[in-house]
Image (cartoon, rainbow, N blue to C red):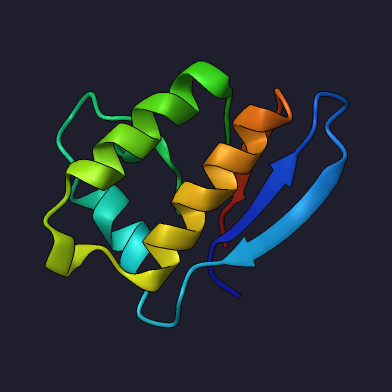
Length: 96
């Protein structure tokens, strides 16, 4: 199935869903991210939840990637993170 990403509101209700692409570009960017980065904490096989503070860091990390390495999936995750921030909610990553 691959990595699923859910936007959750403050009550942890899922309001949006997206998936990593078939090439797993987002997950691969997480696995190759430097130690200590927010992306490095996203687990391929488990669940990971990011709060508003962490989402700002995730957006910054993704936007600092070279433009040619930012895939459509990464752009969608940035938009999902912004949506979660507006809701004062979370991004919930569900691994395989």
